Amino acid sequence: MASPAEPADAPAPSRPSQRTALLVIGLIGAIALGFALGFLARLPLEDNGAPVPEAGSVDVGFAQDMSVHHSQAVEMSAIALAGATDPAVRGLAYDILTTQQNQLGQMQGWLAMWDQPALPSGGYMGWMEAEHSDGHDHGSADSGHMGSMSKMPGMASSEDMAALRQATGPAVDVLYLQLMLRHHQGGLPMMEYAAQHASEDAVRSLAQTMVDTQQSESTVMTNMLTAKGAAPLPMN
Image 1 (spheres, rainbow, N blue to C red):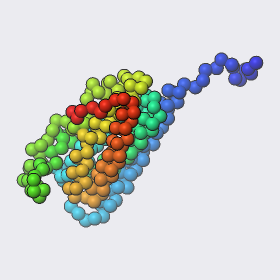
Image 2 (cartoon, rainbow, N blue to C red; image 1 turned 60 degrees about the vertical axis):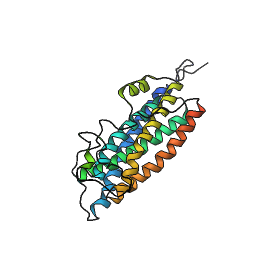
Image 3 (cartoon, helix red, strand yellow; image 1 turned 90 degrees about the vertical axis):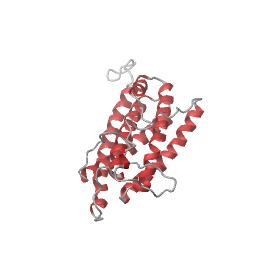
Image 4 (tube, rainbow, N blue to C red; image 1 turned 180 degrees about the horizontal axis):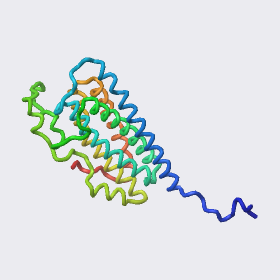
């Protein structure tokens, strides 16, 4: 016979509720850590005596565009962390969420220090100069704006995001992996370009870290999709 303090028919704690609570706690922690790292990451830039990056530069354009890119990855990962059924997918989503939130804090810290807007205006990727066969022609002063795009490759559409929110069960796992793999692949050219051409050492270093991390994660996601009998999405 159960004691009054522990009735036999007492419902067990809700696993979704526990997961949601942990997600909120983890996200708050990631945001706080990201902004802390963003502040600390400003220090090397303040002491090197180099000119402050200006609007239209690789450093500013990369920080602005990649902030947008990372923000969507964080949002997708939060959805997957709450709804995915595969523990490996939830673990990957947590890693992506916390890593990219921290990097987002660093980029926003730089933009604040440079007195630049937190987000881009007038299109994306205009800071990436056209490729030339000789590898040395960097174009005219305004050539970087000729290639501005209305959206960045790999970004999920509003319909994609709605589908991810509405998915249930194993469908969450597959759709998250497909969208995030395409997201990583779409952002890779920006990261590689910034790793080579940004003027600030700290920006080049962060961009290269993104390249290395996301290429590794892309391999993991491709293998996960294969194991689940699903295929990657074509680039949009």
